[in-house]
Image 1 (cartoon, rainbow, N blue to C red):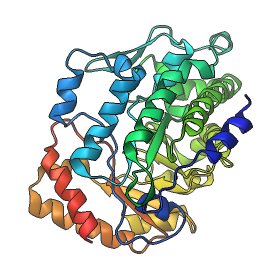
Image 2: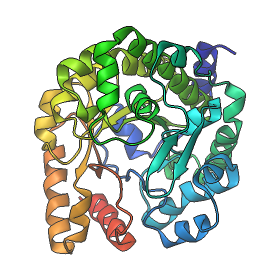
Image 3: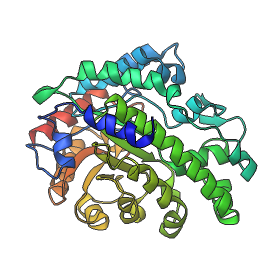
Length: 358
């Protein structure tokens, strides 16, 4: 089945989620309250997640449908958020394609054979749709649990953007300065674009499979793009992120695009084709909306560290952010990055209750 057919099939399979505040915002509507969910909400701070993952490796959890389903549902049950985010990892499609990558505790993704040359790029495997059947099965299980109609909860699909995937592959793991990545971009742009193009194809295949399985929205994470200047982003990254988001244009699902430290890139990121642009905590939402331009909603942007500051501080910040969000085309409340591991889950639940009350 080609990509267009996959996208069309996914569009026909959309659930009736008439009461979804999240989907209303992505359509330009104003629901009764801002929808709220949290990045990295599926785990990390929840004791029930830690108990489930105690003897289970990350990839095993991601590729075991029943585990991925249960972990995705845990924060929905506990916090009553307005969307579930599929439990996965940025490098899952690379692993599924056959790339030698492992998730090392305390470090993150580690690549056995980093990619540095045109020959390395040529040897990069494609992602076959059959390789992501466990993810599609997890989505099938989740849709049965998340319901339909006014009380149904939308499910957000998940993928890493080409630049972030490329950085892991070139550096061999997480990097503070991305020096090898930037050096390759500037010294050998042909090889860079060949690599980024291959990764855009892998990401698009991964997201199309999720759409065909029935997810209600997708988010493209570009965790490391904030390390770039706007000029370099436009030259080296924007075409490939646009290829992914543009490849989903007919899929019938809203597209969210998020990066960390991307305040200076928000306008360019909006041009990649998302319906909602995520904002970290460094830029106020009303200013972010001005940079993004009209016609797109914003998502964010409570600093995750503020959740440790006591409820009076948290409440004041939540109220400020919701007020800023009223001056935008539409606002999805979220953190400005992921939930930190030591966050008190009860604080997250109270944040959801407060946002719903506003």
